[in-house]
Image (cartoon, rainbow, N blue to C red; front, side):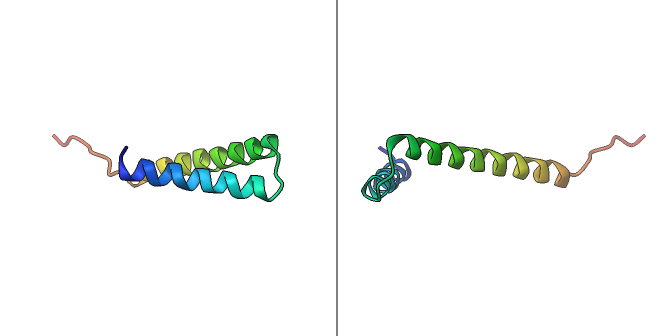
Length: 62
């Protein structure tokens, strides 16, 4: 497993364990995961819009 993927898996497992230890139910954890996915998706869309706006327009000149 790649180093980044292994680290991500460890972090997710640790986060899950801490939430369960903190008394969160599996359904609450799914709600949290959904909110995280929504936040990342929104961020990616906003980043894409900014990147698209920053691209120079190429125009053919005669």
